[in-house]
Image 1 (cartoon, rainbow, N blue to C red):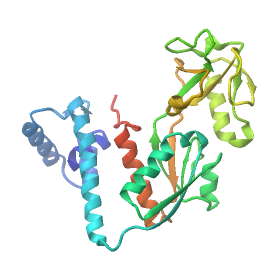
Image 2 (cartoon, helix red, strand yellow):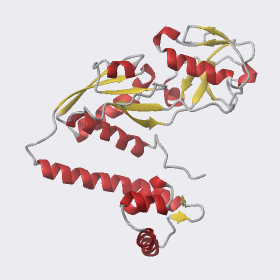
Image 3 (cartoon, rainbow, N blue to C red):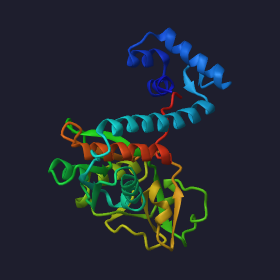
Length: 288
């Protein structure tokens, strides 16, 4: 299972063999033997990519390997050495709808001795740098040399329109269909980098909009955008539509100081990444 996961993660047998510190022929042979035992092909060759059966195998294998590793760690610590502590988690408001509640529940199940103190913050990465948090969930944070960063949830921007809008029942909307509309968004002072990145993404399509710093569209000629993970939580009277323009992703990222993280913080980070894989928030690496 570890060999298959390595090939999946590295995108090829040669890179996986290098990562595993072994020669490529025995790695290829082991996986061919496994495929014969299973009766299915896990990889397409030339180029190397997972088959559908391979994707299912890797998803399950990750859970099994992680559970096995966790069991070894727990046995090594001993039953009396349960992880304890408080981990402060800063998060952007939109992450509070279901990502944060699901994460806190997962931590409570896996590590009952750890308490997660979650708080909303418009600039969570700055809270991390200032020592106000041990972990944060954020978007568009600038690179910091001492911070570890992992994508927790793949996110697309979705258009939010009044339910009375002529496009509200459509299967999607192009930004050109919203010409003459006012773009409603949170005040820039709250999260300048995120705010600017979203406006830049919209303008990259060649369209331009008057911006009103008011987050809820309350007029047929208003609209806004939200992360795809929040669609299930929109208020009554609004409609969410996929944007058909090729906009960049605005992924929700997990940041922490890996060099200074205590065991409780590291455990919460591991739980978050397991949760993301289990819920399908992040996809297996693509070789398209």
